[in-house]
Image 1 (cartoon, one colour):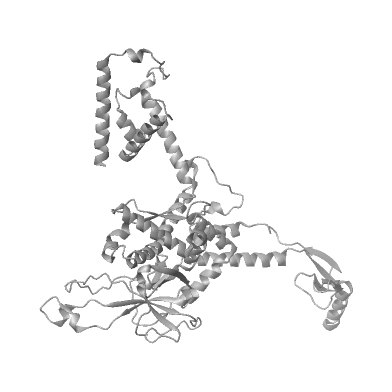
Image 2 (spheres, one colour):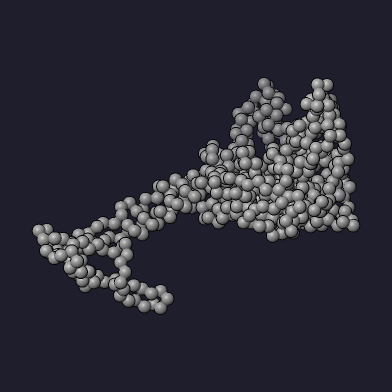
Length: 554
């Protein structure tokens, strides 16, 4: 167990001996603390129920099977991962990356290979759902040891129940201590040296949850950090120092919903039927004989039919008395004699306001709008101003989930590019933050908003058009009214010129500026003096020069 399985990527940079800090770097989860030893060695006490991460993950998976929780989870996953017949759920975006076209082409090709290895286009929904429910995701990077330059050969999913990210502090070396003063040994600082690796156990002991970190239980393997793709949820319990799932906030709400539903069923079963109360006159009989007489009357008049579902028989069973049957009460001499009254059933059995409250509470805890609970609630395709604020918050929440989930692609892409010698580890430090991932967007809010903004801009354009050339210039209108960027202006102008040459659009020189109708062939346009034509050509040349200069600046 002294050696690590897998490979490590070294950036080749030696840290300056004067750059030290008594505070270690944070790990991949964002957890600040580190352990000296132990694999699942630190017990957790979350709500007094869960002792280990095993219990926590198992609880998350049980919650995902509940119908209400499953519906909310599916809303989140379907919004984040959009399946299309023709397009991939995610594509790489390199517009912010300052690199050559050949390098961008290589990066796009390697990202395509990674998606093929993952089979992401077909399994994207399952991968994202597993990450969302468990709160963490592990993949083993399988490479050819004899030919590492071939890149990643396979990406194998690892159950989070079998994997743990471990941080161990190495023993302090006096030779690495740096003196920052002359007052004595107390003024010396030594930066803690942290060893980070993954511990894989094929068959961990879920009951004990304890696996030694130094020697390890039989079957445990220490794996190098760069050999594992690790993507966490980003939610951290800072008091306990563990990674949480997005379902953690809904544990209490789901338990309350379950208890309310169970109590409602019990109440309705016990209070739904009407029951009768028989007051039997026993006269002056002694207590023992009065009870015997009461039992005789009960057996005489009580008729309990029982249906046997196994045999299909219906029989009379008078030996048992359930809580839903009638009540038989003795009455002494001097009473009103034998009397039969009816005890009404429970009232307001159809009241579901408490159930609906806890359902809404569950959806709020999961970040899903409450309006999505109703099965008959259709999507409003009206104005974007009519969209609820909850839907806008939900769209932003899904965007944050996508951003966090994209860290998995970054890790895979980094390893693939470095192994194939496309880039160096030093190059990735400046490139990684500029690589973005474009997910398919199925939310109609963006389309509605863009359509309404365009309609509003065209309305403003129609209003200001009589003043173009008098108070406003064409460039001002295109930039301030239509909100076109310089790049869009150049692209649109080139497209218009190309369509005029192809005959898709009419030539503006052949259009009467007053009537907007085409000029007759061989008309007045041929009799125009030569000098104005030269001036017009000069204006066209100047306009072309200005456009070329603007394009060069961009």
